[in-house]
Length: 288
Length: 290
Image (tube, rainbow over all chains, first blue to last red; front, side, top):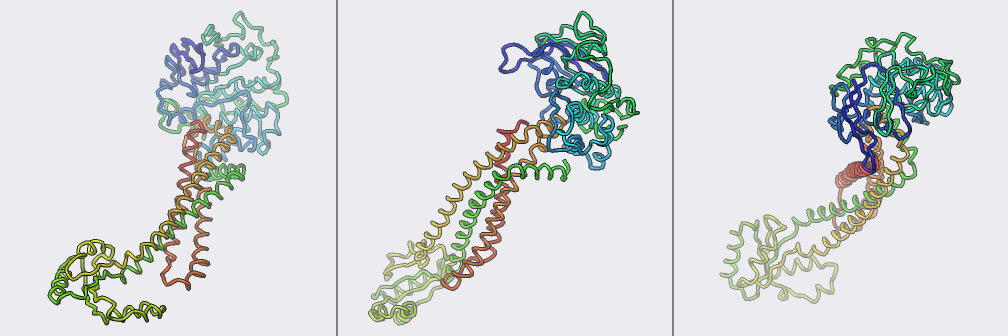
């Protein structure tokens, strides 16, 4: 689904490449951790997948489509198929929880009846039912991140990029967010998560891609945060699958019947490969 | 993007930038008001010219010693001239009667002039009353012709004054337009900065450039339109209270009608909205990442 072939990325002002000769492949439905020190190129990789940047050399493809070749006017269609979550949540403070999630649908022209139907469902999915009318500053950090995930997920993207989504959260809350991302992943969405949280990585033993100075030094299925093996989940973040802490415990989206790739009529290649239509629009109808 | 969410974003933006938006509206109103005034002055020139042009003639003053043959030849030439519509002869007595009529408000002047002091004349109506110059050039110096006078030339000082006022109004409008442009540029800069998080999210979730830019451009267009509406209202007030109320009975010239006001008002509103939107779009290229 996602392929990088010999990708090198050097920023105009940079003296050394942020990514160097990076080759990797991520299949549909995978959950991949991107690990590495700050400045190792994790965020640059995510920016390439979002077409915020173009690779200096090499090929970045999504469903076989060369992202660098997509004309600027069609980049929005790509971004409708790729959701994004950030460490700092990036919510609109003057909009309610429901307003923040609806915003993602409103600005891409979804009909009002779709917005009205889908937003409450997704908020229920992320465990924020009953908090639709709260404003971001009335929520805990974990709840704000749940809103951000709901916003990223509401248009049913094929890929969810998470750039240190637990970076501002305490261990227990982080665990709740991870359970939510797991649930999103179980719906068939590919999740690529950049993180420094060793405990969360070690607790789940999924695929780990480690970057050092922009180069991939490890690509390990069932890997731990550190190359020499993890400690099976009793790391510093206490990634023991405990409760979601202060942000509520409603994040098991995959457990409430919304899981299943087929259930939401996957956008398939049309979502990105064709870039010719709003594939997620149809997909939204399948929520829940 | 649906109209509802678009208006919500637009409303929030206008509320947030109320002070700068108000400044844009006021400068745009002054600018467009000056422009509208200039247009009305042009309309007045057109009105006066249209009214007088049919009453103005080219007058060929004849010398006292012109022979009958010379006069007949001159008249025949004029009648066969395609630029001349009609030729009418006035003898000295008729010229004197006209003179007395024209200067009836100056009896001292009339008292000092007799029929013998004034030349007989041929009065010409032209096919195109504005083409008197060619007649003046063509017949000056002919035998029996003392002088050729285009009466329309007498109005040139008036036209020059009116044109001067309209040029001054246009110049002031241009200066104000520069100020309005700078303010719109500032408004976009402030607005783009205040809404940078919103626009960043719009980009991330797949909003098109047009959707992201639309609220900004509409904000500018509405400000320009509001300025244009104020300017148009000022033009209406000018016509109703000043032109029709005060000047109507103080001048023998006809004054521009309501049609000119509607045309000028519509023009300043349309121009205000379009120019502000264009300036906003230009500023967006500088201050909003696509």
